[in-house]
Image (cartoon, one colour):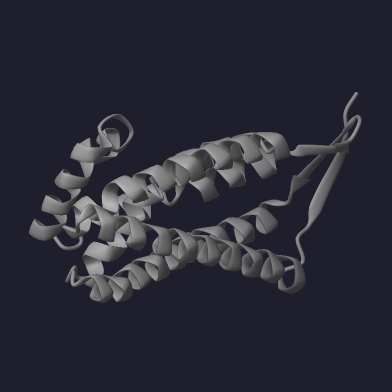
Length: 203
């Protein structure tokens, strides 16, 4: 586990300084963080939906077939990568308005580190539950928002006022990207891949 990852949850202000230095020295430093931690939600969701399952009625457990779960998780992984890249590209585009000149790699890297709480929240996929998902994703949303507003001025070398306005814009676009991609992913999965459910009676 990398030092920036730990500092994001213990010393976020210092973490962004370290991350910026790493990205300046190694432009693709964020890739390992994104590609590896981005696997946490789909892998946990695969295990949870195929081995644990969820209950829609008393004494009944519903699971996904291995093939359906794999399709869902591959779609989720691709959605994560595409979503982070789109947010990073928007940050790059917005930066021109604020006279900052980060590279595309730095912007995508910033997005990848900002959504880290969602990667950690993916552990909840091991136990599929609507209420657990709402609780964990809500907490991840709050902390990602905190990381965004704390980190963007530091990462982009902006004044506080500029950083606040820029962060607000990025937050709005990030939310739009997240909702749009997830909806598209679910529609593709339901309408084009035909998920297979396995129902078992308990007791």
